[in-house]
Length: 314
Image 1: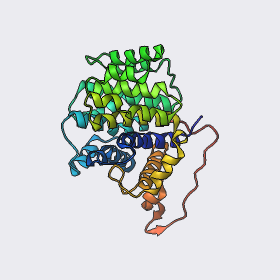
Image 2 (image 1 turned 90 degrees about the horizontal axis):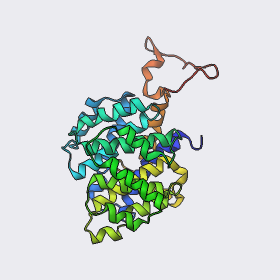
Image 3 (image 1 turned 180 degrees about the vertical axis):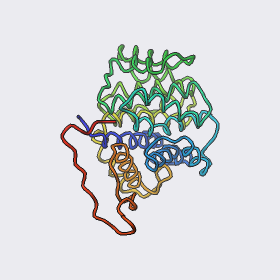
Image 4 (image 1 turned 60 degrees about the vertical axis):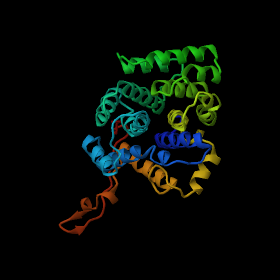
């Protein structure tokens, strides 16, 4: 593989965070952004704790922090970010991926635009992790994955492909999708920024958060954060942490400010490491100490071996 699953998992989370924070000049300036990915963290913690998707546990965790609410323009973007752990956890199987993405969306109101946006972003990330993402066929594949729908997202994604084939510039695309601050416009904008600079994470994020044209049209910081976060997640999954500028990563490691409700960026990395371990099937003995006891007495841990090529992917 070009990059390890661990580096792609980390790249997805880190990319989403950096993409959103770059919309504020690299500084986290609002409480809204502090909560931007909090639902994603809670969902990740649920998957780590249970080793499976449990919608009731997700709901309980979000209600505990008063994050469960009806779909609005603001919450819709948070829902897309919140479903990233599901996309990562089930990326190997397109059928399970679609089923579980649709299942987790039941937590919120069944908005067709949110559903299509979630499927589009989740499937693109899955293709990136399995190294099957072809920029020439990605959009038709996404449209097929979404299926029949009354929303305008497939049509707008096709328009993105046409603009890419024409070699259109950023200003032309912003003029096309920047007239209204809707999720159905944010998604194609993010895919354009990602696909037009496929191998360059830094440029993709900077283009996604460039708001020179948006200022004229009165776009809010939330719109810019959303485009940046989605672009960052896509590019981070494709380019992994190796493609994220080193100085950006060092700055995050040096700061001690909260990250999506966690105490620091280092804590986010530890969370992702635990998430990768659960996804890969690694058995953490420290989390299951009772398994190491026999009639109240500790016993030596057993070593487990397998013949070559016996262990298969889930």
